[in-house]
Image (tube, rainbow, N blue to C red; front, side, top):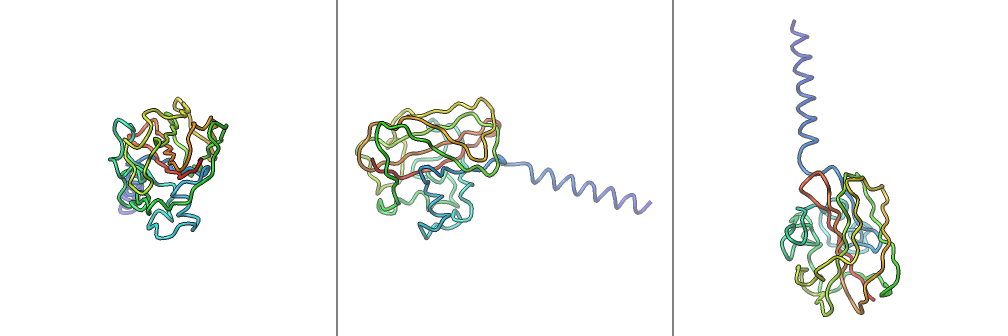
Length: 196
């Protein structure tokens, strides 16, 4: 009798653990690699002083609904996640930049460690005259994304690529990529510093 009780408790313990592990935020994780995002630069050691994001570049998860809701202004690059606040630090406009050519076709790539049902991927860019030495706000971005990739609930691949035409810009800008998860209240955010 005692062994049956012990076994039953062990099963309950395993089931309880299972619920705790699967509850909470989305099981999806990923980050933009082309153009390199700030979290990628931190993870590969190109940029130092990044805090926890250097070990978790795939974890910049925050509330979805951008730009109507989502992370507060000034916390967008970190997805509103204080653990990764280093991504919001403009570093005096000294984040490494990727050279792009305005009006050309470009392929954006994500590295996903745990794909999840997806609403879409959206790509926003800063307005002309953006000040790269200040934290990113909604007012800094063009109102509409220049590229939207609908997914209609499909799961992306572990390497996910999207092609589109780059906007007609010149000088230094920031591209904000937003991966919106379909079946949770979250999205993933990635900021890439670029120069046209």
